[in-house]
Length: 495
Ligand SMILES: [Zn+2]
Image 1 (cartoon, rainbow, N blue to C red):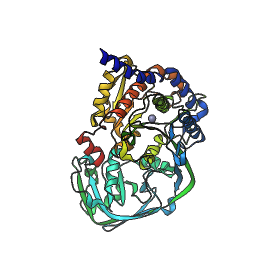
Image 2: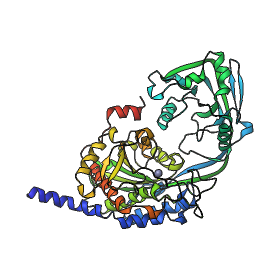
Image 3: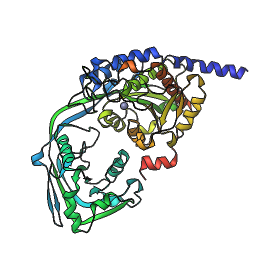
């Protein structure tokens, strides 16, 4: 009986802290950051910066330590707006029948993977599912890899980068009209992914017909390679590809992440960190610049992003408030991270994972939150449960808090590959175990209807409290979370 009383007393501060995560706060904060005046928080935009400043002020008020640039809460990464110079860009196949490939007619530069430069290497055809890549791939370094597979997943993309090729060529079987659309999109000014190092491979989309003569001379059937069911590497013997990429920089800008740290109370464990993350950017307003498919509806042209990801953004702020009020402080330190550029391709989290405020090996978990303000009232999907013991920890924490009436369940959309599609992936690929909290999409996804009035703040408060209890458990436990060995091999080392 006494033991139980002591246990209850020890629990009380944690519960009190959890209760500071309230529906009223959630509603109020989403009302601020998803207001029409924030114009959909596009990356980059003055409104996105306004939201970052607001979050930084909240962290300062809560007494957290800045984890951004030069003693501030803001970490900035630079963005280049660039345009391809069509008339000076070209590619040449040497050897075999040879070919001069024209930008626009025969090939485009695949998004975000290019920098001005000259690239060359022997042509090698890679076919079949890349997950089955058992063959020795060290020989692919410095080569121009032609990927026959018509669909490339983010996880595949990382794998191909690790082969260190000179270039990546994606074969396109697009019809003439579809190709014309692809080219016109490629020709528009675009933002270059700031996380990709200049000096990496060039990436092309190449029409299959343009490579056909070269392949045919070697007796290779490209169409057959596209539907291959086993992994194969086949050199296009005696042929090389030279690529001349000419890119013009139109303007330099930058975008913010917000980083705050709560120092842990244990002299040793405080050097390890639990990260709570969410993306504060959204897709902006309807119009040609809108990258996320935002369309006007009547007089409304602002995609508010209240659920995506206003809900996760304010959850991280509410978690910060709960942790800041918790005495004693957790043993491990906590990082509250609000990233941007997610909608453009996980830019902010990629930048943070390459320039973390603390050594990345000291980050023991990332709990990422995206879209938890709508749909089911008693269930939350946690993607990634099967990949580490965080799944079992979450089940245990969920079962210990029946009052939340919030059941954590497994990924119910494995075919959608959500594990590879939001900011947590930039932690996972660096070896940090993750869970991704997500309530699924809805017809208002990336549309003007994703507005604050549709947020179920009461339900969201219970999801956020569950994540809070989980964070407390991870931060205080003797052992750091562990990967399941098979998942580690597949996701981190890429074998
Ligand atoms: Zn999102």
